[in-house]
Length: 372
Image 1 (cartoon, rainbow, N blue to C red):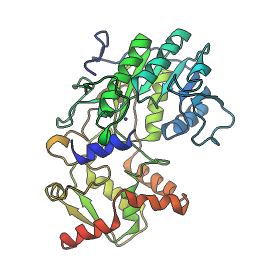
Image 2 (cartoon, helix red, strand yellow; image 1 turned 60 degrees about the vertical axis):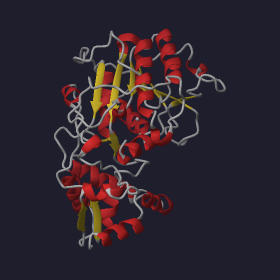
Image 3 (cartoon, rainbow, N blue to C red; image 1 turned 90 degrees about the vertical axis):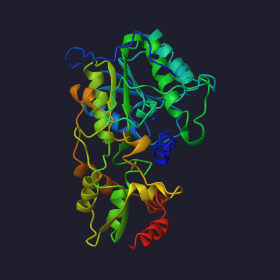
Image 4 (cartoon, rainbow, N blue to C red; image 1 turned 120 degrees about the horizontal axis):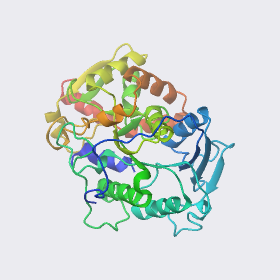
């Protein structure tokens, strides 16, 4: 497993073939509807949740949240909040969802199949009309093949009962596969599976993508891995939420890779957008080839993956099905500018965490090794 994929799995805390009845050949889209929906969001106060809530509110839908009441509790005081736990064995578990129904449920915080199965089975019993489960491209078994689509081989766990991510997130992908299956098994033909890659944009708690606009804005010589033509796939959290809500409003059923943008995004274009958004005038990009990066086993660059070997397909996942179903993307210039603007509003203690993504002392050491 490459260092970058390991980092993706670890922070994104996103077996066997799917059910025989599952059709991946094409998405089935329901009739146009302007009806206002009763929506339940599991979680709702982390990263994807708030963006989804705000968009659903703007579209006039009625929203309820189900979570433990521990994260960002000040958000959305006007919305019904049901306190409980995804683990049905803890406290009151999911009892607060009993005898309740919604038009659509968004599950963007399900990591263990036992938890996902318990809630999905309850939703099916209660007559919920549609379940949208957020999975991950980490569900795929391999990342060495370019342009893999939703029919690619899926990860498998030797122990389907495992309830831990493992060292470096080694079980994450297989667990996501089992969560997908649990959702579909309970809700039958009422499930939409969304498989995003790197989710970025304002309020991103990981700093993986944010590191680059911030670092370039600091100016000077900036160490950059790879080559300008290396591919990069990201999706702004607002675009992901818009696609998820569109699937709910259109009653779109299917499996979708939610990776962006529509066309191939060169790594060099991302850095150019960072220079454009930043205020520094003395930026000098110092490129370090993938071969040289590989010589430093202790070095991991945020969000980038070598366009070679086992990670060659990592940033090339096919999004054609999602695009055909209406997924759209804002420009890289907009994503970078909005992310940098948001980051500058954060308190100093929060902004200091960005250094964890890549140690400034390590950057200086490697720049020196390049003669920089």
